[in-house]
Every structure is written in structure tokens, then in C-alpha cells.
Amino acid sequence: MKKVIFKALVFLFTLQVFAQQNDSLSIKNGIDNPNMQTTHHFGIFSSRIQQNFKKRPIDKTTLSFNYASGNNFQPFVETHLPSDPQVREALSQVIWFQRRFDFIDQETTPAEYYNIVIDAVIKEFRASITLPIAKKHELNVNLRSYLITDGSYPFSFFTSDETIEWFHSNIAGGEDPFGRRFYGLNQVNFSYTDRNGNTLQLDNNDFIIGGLEINHHYYYPTFEFNKTKNLHFNFGSHLGINTSKFNPSLDIGISANALKQFKFANKNELDIATGASLLRKNLIDFDEVIDLGNNKFLATLEADVEFTKYTQKGNYHAFGLNYQIQSRYNKQEETEYYRLLGDFAAINAGWHNGVSRLYVPLSNWSIIYTYGRRNYKLALYIKQDFSVNNSPDIQAGMNFSVPIHK
Image (tube, rainbow, N blue to C red):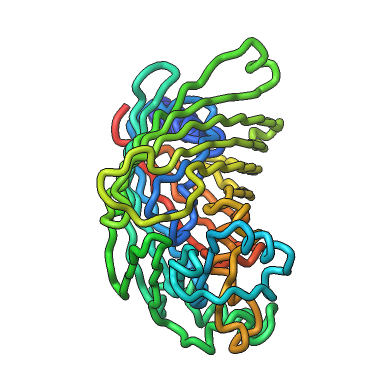
């Protein structure tokens, strides 16, 4: 009798482990990254599109909580954009850092003017819910908010000024290459006056409700070659309602993504994905808005590779590398004639970044680790800006997701 009971218990235990494996494997759905949008000082006021590299719609309603911390630093810089075509032509013949433009007033020397200075560690908080709405469709709704901080220890260990400057002084980059120490560590200096004379000013501990994003996540088509080639595709539509007083507006966008999966004999897998999206900013303005770049469209290209190792219990560890590049905020043609003024004698480099980096595509690399179980998923990432636009320089974040209903 004892042997029968023992065998029954072993059988039930085996079934339970097998069920946990199946449940756990089902939560590993292609590449399911955390939201890794940068804490760019213009981007936080608009909706942006997170690429979707999942294989299929979710089968359970899922709650997700996202946190990010990014160090943004750009010294004060002023910009003149002369209106006279002859002045523009003359400036275009001179390399940008040697241009001279004597602005007197709008009547005698008409020109647009704006200035910017950014020094803060920006915290992002997102809460989202994703619902299965049909066999090949899902809907995601997320609310994003931001906290402006000085980045003091211990709340910004990886993204604080001290950590970054310690790295520069002891490992790579040289002593104070962009002037953080010169201007002072652990402070907030966040001010932008746009070309229309409107000012965006933020102080330490200011809290912003950025907006609500509604994503049709997504249509997952089935093609004949999907099964044999293990290829997966999805298409998305996106609606963003921006709620801050600086940019009360509505954005719309579309996205397309593809995933190739390689499965190994030991059930481990390798996923390779790529995607693109296009966002139309400020399709509708609900009130007067700050000029956050005169490019109305933001395009994004993204690529991702992830290796997944399963445990004996069916849980998994996933290690990913992500590359993202986003189009410029301002029209490139203005670089032919703009005149930049900054404190270039006080620091070694980068005095112009606050303006010049608005006219070039912004790129970054992220390393991601994810641990998944049948009842939750935890992801950690760190993002680095190797093009040194400092918006942000370095960003770290985490995501916690849990299914709540089948």
C-alpha cells in the first residue's frame, strides 16, 4: 500500500512539474522586452513606440510595471537661425563652429532663436495592462510618468553623476570630458526656450504625468511559411494622448516587426528580431504646446537578439542585446546655417550637444536579462549611448510582469 501511495505521489509530482514547464514555456513568447524608451528630454513629453517582438498574442491579461533612470546632461547653448536667404547661404559656406552672426533685433536681422540646458537624472514610471481581444489581436494600455531628480546616491546608483565621472576618471573617457564636475554634480538645471518664446522649466522633484498610450498589440498574421521557417510577424497601430502642460496633444503611429526563432535539441532557443515604426507627433494639439522639434515624424529601427536557457523546472533565463536608432527631432537643413553659442572654452567637448544632437539620429545599445516563471517575469537592462549625445548618457531599468486572468 505504501508503495502504491508513493508511486501515486511521484506521479502527481511529475504531472505538476510537467504542468509548470508547459505553463512556464507558454509565458516565454518570443522576445518580450521591457519598455526601454530613452529618458530623452523631448521624448518624455511625446508618446513613442515600443517594438513588439512576440510570436503570438498573449492568452492571459497581464499587468506590467516599468521603471527607468537616465542621466541627461547638456550644457547651456544658444541658437540663431537667420531668416534672410543670403545670410543663410553665407553661413553655409563656413564650418559650423566658426560661423559669425551678429543678431541685433528681428527688424534689422530677422532670425529664430532658442536655447537649452539639461542636467538631471530623469526617472520614468510606467504601469500597463495588456488584454487578449481576439485570436490574433491584443490591446495594450499604459500610463507613463516622470520624476525629475538630481541623481543623488543611493537612489541613482548606476546613473548618478558620481558613478559616471568615476568611470571617466578611472576607466575610460578622461577626467570630466563633458564638464559635469565643472558645472557641479548632483543638481537639476532643466530649461528650454523654444523658437516661439515658450519656456519649459523643471526643478528638482518635479513630477509629470506624461500621457496615456493605447497600442493595438497587434495583428499577428499567419502565412504558409511561418511554421516551416519558424518566422513570425506582427503589425501594430498606436495612439498616444500626451497630458503634460507642455505638450497637450495626440500622436498616432504604426509598426511592423519580424521574429526568427531557432530551437535546439535541449529546448534552449535563439531569437533574432527586427522592427520599424513611424510616429506622427502632434497630429492634434489641444492647447498651446512647446516646440519639441520641427520634424513632425519620428521613425525608429530596432534589432534584437536573445538567447534563452531553460531550467529543469521549465523556468528560463534570457540574455538579450538590443540596438535602437531613432530619427532626428529637428530638420537637418537647419544645420547648414545655424549659429551656436556656448561656453566652449570652459569644458573639453560636447558644449554644443544640447542643440547639435537634435539634428542627428539618436542611437543606443541595451543589454537585457530576463528571468521568467509561469506566474511572473522580471527583466533588468542597462542602456548606453555610444554616440555620446548624453540624452541620456546611461540608462538603467527594470520590468515586472504578472498574468492575472486566463
